Length: 273
Picture 1 (cartoon, one colour):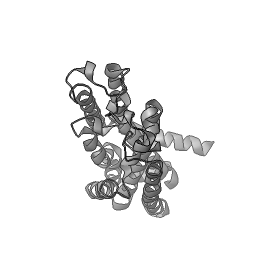
Picture 2 (cartoon, rainbow, N blue to C red; picture 1 turned 120 degrees about the horizontal axis):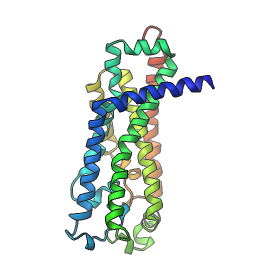
Picture 3 (cartoon, one colour; picture 1 turned 120 degrees about the vertical axis):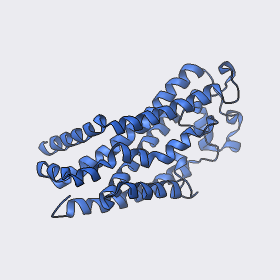
Picture 4 (cartoon, rainbow, N blue to C red; picture 1 turned 90 degrees about the vertical axis):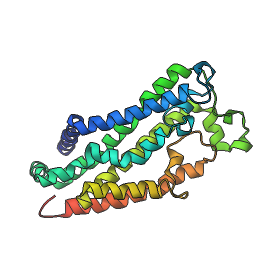
């Protein structure tokens, strides 16, 4: 119980650093603006300028469904997530280390507590940054498009034409939205952990941004086998249950490799954090 209390306090103190930072406020503002712009685009400027004629289901028009807007707001957000996470929180470790704040923190805690407080907070920060534009967007789309049921005509396709998984998603949009929101948050949390782990290993924010962005965009968006979009964007015709599950099979090991390496570097060192 005492160990849990210390760990909770450590995470709380780390979270406070995020909430008081002006950089984190800017990052959240950027995420919020992208979510709002996407929603305005998908509600008022996609297909028709008359919102009454807009056929889109609120879940399909939301920020999570990038194809429902003409602008690439969702793409901009997804591709820059590693950079946003590092600016908002993960990169603080480099500054703390230069000013010996890491050593002071270590003296108050132990290495494991310090490491996991950073890792857990990086995941929480990633979830917050990811959920803000999604929540604001779904509120906007439900407000303006309540009762609409369109999915770019996918709702008219048969099971054979659409596939079992996509057919189920289109005909259970509310539950699909909740499932994909949770998978988005999980992917974001794991990405936050990977960002923090690479920061631990490289001790260089800019280089870490470059490497994580290369992994994130090059592997998980630029390679069909590793494509992470299958668990981040609902209502895509080509998606199947197999491709949905395979995303985690190809993604989680990458996060584990970096986080385990960071654990041994931070916790295993005898001299400094």
